[in-house]
Length: 97
Image 1 (cartoon, rainbow, N blue to C red):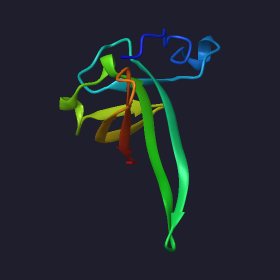
Image 2: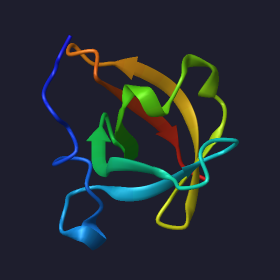
Image 3: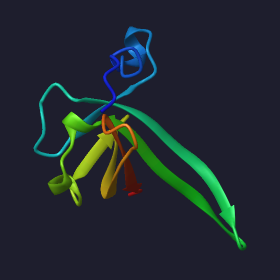
Image 4: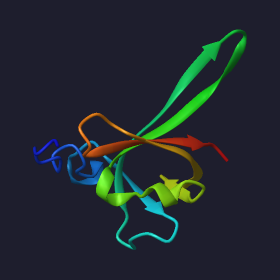
């Protein structure tokens, strides 16, 4: 298991870090810091975005799939939860509203 302190990566932008504040439906009221990306994708003549959020594993559970994650005022539905190799983080595949 990865043992490094991830706080430097998951410090909110408002405090000089890289993370965006997010609110998980039914989760902690103080929010969840996420590294959010809604990269543009274009394949086989189709175009769109693939929103994802990297989050510390302790903040989300497998049972959170289908719940709403609100990031920067936009509500996304968690489509999939992909544990990363280090075990300390998970990548959330999100559905745009």
